[in-house]
Length: 191
Image (cartoon, rainbow, N blue to C red):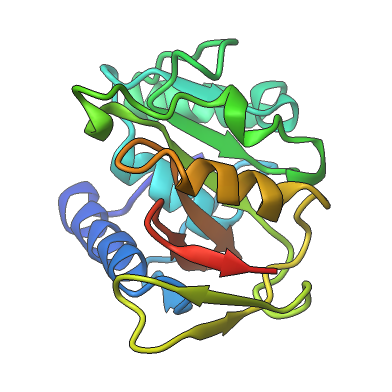
């Protein structure tokens, strides 16, 4: 399957969308670059992978993504090396959140280098059909009401433990269809 039509400009546009999603947590940010994606990736997941990953970036993929055409597509377009150990990866892609590992199984960075933590991309079925949560923190004026659908029951309690690791901790970008929602490690979530 093809990747970006114009790799440089398309990757820049997707990167700007990911920065906007991270700067304004809880806000749904559209990705204005449509991309035919391999199963089981949504268009936003595929675009984010092509933008953030390369031959020097060790990634972990969940069972659904690792067993399908997505791995071959990422290897062809990015030269992406894949690991079976989520603790070693710099990026992780989850296409079925209900079967994902607990957040403590991903690398939170080191005390000396908190920026070397993992970025977790979680593909979800909905940004508005999950349990209501209230997000507060940097980038949110007062609070944001967010209802991410398709997450495991333990996700928000694990998120609180991840947030307590600050300045270490993982950052999350949720994808759905052709849109993103960012959840940096600094955001407090009331479930």
